[in-house]
Image (cartoon, one colour):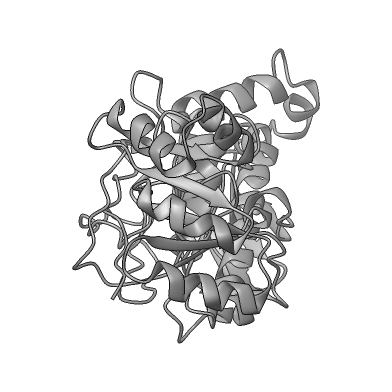
Amino acid sequence: MRSGCSAPTTASRGAASCRRGSHPRGQHDHEHEDANAALAPPPPRAEAPSRSATTTGRAHSADAAPSAPLIDLGPSGHPPPLTRVVGAALEEDAPWATHQHDAASRRGDATADLVAREAGVFSGGEVFTAAFAHRPPLAVDLHVGDGDDFTAGDVLASVSGSARGILTAERVALNFTQRMSGIATLTASYVAAVDGTRARIADTRKTTPGLRAFERHAVESGGGRNHRYSLSDAVMAKDNHLAVLTRSGLDLASALRDALSRLPHTTHVVVEVDRLDQIPAVLDGGAHTVLLDNFSLDDLREGVALIGDRATVEASGGVNLDTVGDIARTGVDVISVGALTHSARALDLGLDLRID
């Protein structure tokens, strides 16, 4: 039976190796952009802190473990996204004096409830908390964890303290939480659509610039899986890359073997094909994952049979909620869905404030 590849943790972002043999299949997704070593069961999650500080994770299927705290996300050597991105958003929204809030909030303290106007899956508790942490003294109490389902009318969190502080950070906190919960909710719909199959739903690198860590976290909140964080994490060869590799006169299999011989042994290599007759050479060349791009359902089934246990099989292209179930039933390991992050609708959440 084909196995997934060992996945880097969300903190390390490192490339990972893929060995055939023991890992169970799970949920995943992808798109031409992101085929790396995140094709396997996620690492077990450490015990979550209290809800008042961060959030707990969604208990999905056996191999879809909750994601790590956002403070750990992002490539090494850069400020944590939670601090950097939220701080920049607050600075953007209120770079100077907030005259409207000064006039409206002189009465002191207030309490505000984050209320769902529609049903969905929650994500972004840490980001919501961080937005108000920049405006002390404010206390945030999260009533749900990332990955939890909610219905219209549910109170998801409460904020108390300075009315001015709440009003100043309100829009930023809502923007992030609505966006992330929208991604989590859409992802959960895709995951539900492939239930009972071996296919994993995975994201891609088609994320909002600067918000990749947040959006990937939201995909995990919805039960999906992450592919490579960046171009530095894995090698993905598409049609143009293959043309360059073979221009020296080598056949495709030899060109791939030559290229792999110059890569670190931990590097995961994904090769995209758009025809069945390309598959044998790609396998002979040593690809760890074969990405079947825009294949018909019949060709996907044939591709799965051709590849067998020699590589992970990923499908991309033409994936939506109407087609993803049929694609999953062809036997592929991973289905990449760029729409998880580039087309998700922000959920309708509101912050209802009362002056104490």
